Image 1 (cartoon, rainbow, N blue to C red):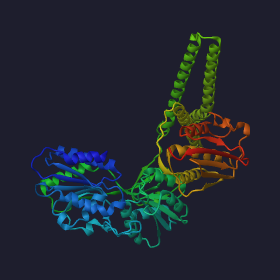
Image 2 (image 1 turned 90 degrees about the vertical axis):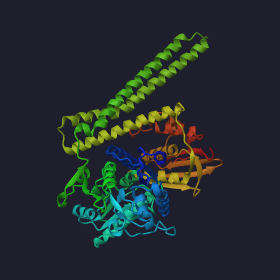
Image 3 (image 1 turned 30 degrees about the vertical axis):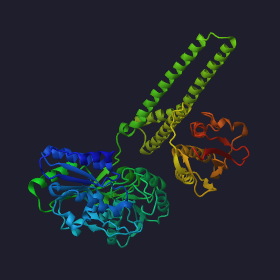
Image 4 (image 1 turned 45 degrees about the vertical axis):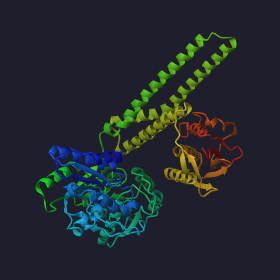
Length: 626
């Protein structure tokens, strides 16, 4: 969407034509496109409000990944070369790291004397690599813009400064026994630049060992493995993580996976990534929208023709800590010699549990809607019975159908009441206890956990009911694309192992190193996760095996456990809704029903192997060619 938006503005003038040379805005167009577009929009509005009459020309470099870095200089050259003579820009505005470094890499003849403004970039940069450089092993030198490029006509703007030294001193003040710093950076220009700067700054701490967790040669899964293998007295410092070695964009869910893998490892942030849910804190730039201030600087440059660099602002940093994590880890912040800003400060009871309160209200509304639907269904069933004027056989058949519908309705309401009442009672009961305000902080935490657990159970029940409804009504749309089934199975198994807290052994077996087939990856993962979770739930200190085979034109996937097993007389019943072999085990009783409906929708079958007696073995099939 941003690309189309930008192309339109590259063709049409932003402001009325007046004979003035244009203001040329060149953006990187990286994955953080929302931030870029908001700053450009603010720039345009403020420049027009100030009375700027220059035409605004917008160019995008369309930088997508670090693998394209050797091409950026050529793209910048092509853009600058388009504007000469009467079209020569009066001001050039660079937005984003990639546009910034591409301009710095230009030949002197192209940089000319046109004043330049910059934003959303760092003062510490690295030279762009050549075509012959191996980007995965390249270790560039970090340079300071103010030292390296004193001759360039950069007159104003805003640059970030990542304060490595202050972050290390903050870590040492909170964790004095620290011997190793493990730095996480991703496979992007920003990540490589930040890593080069960290390597340079860490030379000031010869007593500390720097461990690089480089996204150019790692995926999120190998990073998690290396986090588990870190030596004692190690603290993690997060730079940025959006792109891994396979150029897959993860955004925030990757750092969540790392957090769940090593929840007790001390983590700090150099750029605010992870603060608020994983990182304890960090000394980070004070990020804010800069479009309006950039427009004011551009307008002043056009009016006053500033000749020095006095308007280049280095964005200040701030000490930002997560109050909740500081309290949980019982950290002493008295040694921190700087003002601290806190986030996650404990809110009021309503603010803290607003979602749970509204969740309960929503649940009551859902139950009311279910009751209305059930009454409506009953009314139409009764009306159908009363209006039947057919033969005795037809009348008996209609009567049987009405009674079956009534039975299903009663069973549905009974199951819903049973499944919902237990967590709802816990939520309401412990909410009343908390509202009295007479319990200790430890008891409050315990009650909060009970409320959260039961709220999650209610949400999972509603989601399962909606899934069953959509599947039975044939309203669920499957999105089939080619994927490697072996890799999907391995990733699902790894995620289940990380999420579970049991002592069971998980393993994966396959006859093939790779098996490309068309699948709806989300639905296939849902079926496998349900089967693995069930196996883990009913197995204690045993083994669980996920196996992938091929028979004729079908992929055959099985989950085998050494748990309590399923009696033969109940093996067909487990796929019915709300059917639970053990009423004391947590769950909604809908998981296997959803698995059966999903597998049948894509043309497969699911069953329990009756010949396996050392536990339970669930087997399902998936067509290789759809």
